[in-house]
Image (cartoon, rainbow, N blue to C red):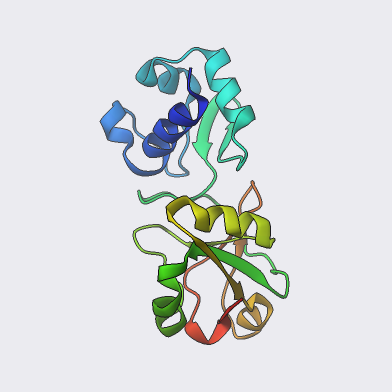
Length: 171
């Protein structure tokens, strides 16, 4: 079994297209583990291996149900409470995206939130997925003081609706 390939399939189903696997997420993004296993033709051992080996801890399993921790484009309410962010957070992106971000800020696109990292290493890994990475600094403490709301997912990713350009610096 290719763990990365299965993890990507699970992400697609649990974050973006549950209907393609014949699944329906509940309002908080959960689905029964047994239903996911049947839909993706996985064993419980395979599922447990994917969840355990996913370095980003994208999935959570509670009481026989599973969901993605963040990154949804489908309508779900993950139930995260607002949280006070650290003074700075980081966003990794391909270097070609830097100029537009410095003009427009960070936009959530078709997802629920902009994703931010607490460390530059994670941000660099995220940015490297689609080319040479750049790590942007987000002045999250100043944003929070200005009234912007932040959430922290169960796997430690910081989430916010939008990061205005005035709060983003390169380098």
